[in-house]
Image (cartoon, rainbow, N blue to C red; front, side):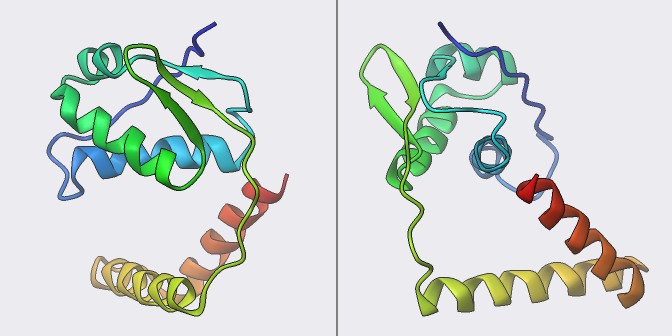
Length: 130
């Protein structure tokens, strides 16, 4: 049975639509809201629901499949699969640190204080742990 998930993306965002889709679905996967065996909407169904080209959704599904989250079946959609959690490589950790630093700088530029960012990071971590 296809999992009923509702995604909302911002088509005016600087973040490409495919990346927004990947990020949202990855959060659902990591938080346990999407479990192995869940079937995602077809590429065309998801694209129609989001108002994007089907290739945008196809790219997002491919990225998640490459990460080991999804099994893709041509014409049948995507299914969440059991995933062995890999050990992070030093390169992946460095990339994370760069992205986190850029995100913090963006928040500082928009007026957030260093004191307000730490609790938000902790809250995000706790959400994934529970």
